[in-house]
Amino acid sequence: MATAVRLSGITKRFGTLKANDDVSLSIRAGSIHGLVGENGAGKSTLSNIIYGLIRPDSGAIEIDGKAVGFTSTRQAIEAGIGMVHQHFMLVPTLTVAENIILGREKSSFRLPMKRLEQEIRELGHRHGLEVDPCAPVSSLSVGEQQRVEILKLLYRQARILILDEPTAVLTPSETERLFVTLRSLAAEGRTILLITHKLDEVLAVSDDVSVMRKGALVGTIPTSSATKEVLARMMVGRNVLLTTENPSQAAGSPALRIDRLGYVARDGAKKLQDLNLTVHSGEIYGMAGVEGNGQAELLSLLWGTYDRQATIDGSITLDGRSLLGMSPAEIAGMGVSMIPEDRHKSAIIADYGIEENLIFGRHREHDFHRGIGFDHEKIHRNALQMIERYDIRTGSGSNPSIASLSGGNQQKIVLAREMERPGLKLLVLAQPTRGVDIGAIELIHRRIIDARQSGMAILLISSELEEVIALSSRIGCLYKGAIRHEFPEESVRNGRKKGSGFEKEIGLHIT
Ligand SMILES: Nc1ncnc2c1ncn2[C@@H]1O[C@H](COP(=O)(O)OP(=O)(O)OP(=O)(O)O)[C@@H](O)[C@H]1O
Ligand SMILES: [Mg+2]
Image (cartoon, rainbow, N blue to C red; front, side):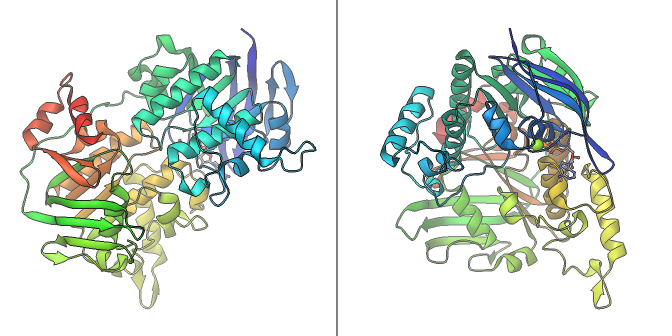
């Protein structure tokens, strides 16, 4: 089989850090090639180099047997390369069709909009990427937005598609659907480079898989000879516990109480209806469910950021005090921490350093002050402690900006800051390990269990059933704005046993 992409000796430094270290890699034309590695291993950097976004310091690239030296993405696109980034790059206010032609408006053979929309419809239909070309992107679900990103590449006739963590934000059924599309694209002769942290997915869909660690390529193997354990060991350099140790513990008194909660959006849509649940201290309450069943509204109520024009019913109390109507700062002051799902929008300040981000929202804490100013020595020491305890890979230099960290390491910063808040009573975790590598998932799961052992009440909202089952004391199934079914502790414990079919059983209550 011909080689679509051949990289030889690619090296890229950021300051003193080698993000890519002498990487040589070949991708067969018409194959799906998986690329895995820990957070910060250099996967996105390597993809950006192939896509012409970053120029390597040294090394050579061949596309379809021809040497190239892209100085811009435009050249890469002309050579038939397309990329969907780790964080989507669509313009929300424009329609699907407008986003797809964005950057090509000046082309001499401009199509009338109607024709374009028709073409997009047909293209989508052919590849299982159905989406309404006239809809504004802001009205689409993340799964649909991703279809638009891929359609955009296909519309430009990309033959080599790079997808950087495309499944991180998808539901299991959306992921399955994406894989069907990818397989049919490969069968048509297109080449796909797929970056993901989910080893099951690489095993399910790829033909070959390459593993990176600390900038270097550890190896490339045919997927048929790979297992989860083999890949995990290649990634991390040691054996990884793929199951979470979860000793049982008696729960304490009720901490968070949600009673007959209702949420009607300003447009009249019922988002939550008669939602009831209690989370005790020393307990992890797992909320399973497909996104879009009221999770976002519940989170906004717990965090004080809900739309004040929505109609709210019922009550939310923590240790008997109502949380409804309070501001986020007041809620935090009551001992509540939250790991939001979209950390890029709401949990970090990109221009600031790691040290500042590690106290963001906690900057009023007495500990970080001396006299009327900040105690920079203490802030620095706090950062060192968190970096150690959460194994945050900070790259080079002292206090680098958080934007220079890889995606998974940014997530660890948010977790460290929120989980270590003094006086914490309630921890609300939304998709806490999304985009995080398996070694780091192991660590984060251990920290969550530690927090439970120390008596915290924890509400875990996750679309990863495996995670909900591994961590939770009890599980509630959220469907259309209410808890449709609750699994008590004993059935969750039994459900953890291999071959129990528990995931399927939960699945029945959430779809
Ligand atoms: N623009 C930049 N400036 C400085 N350092 C950078 C920059 N971009 C990446 N890095 C560093 O290079 C290393 C590799 O980052 P990269 O984003 O390629 O990792 P990754 O494998 O994609 O990780 P993740 O799985 O977390 O997305 C990291 O240590 C990161 O901090
Ligand atoms: Mg990345």
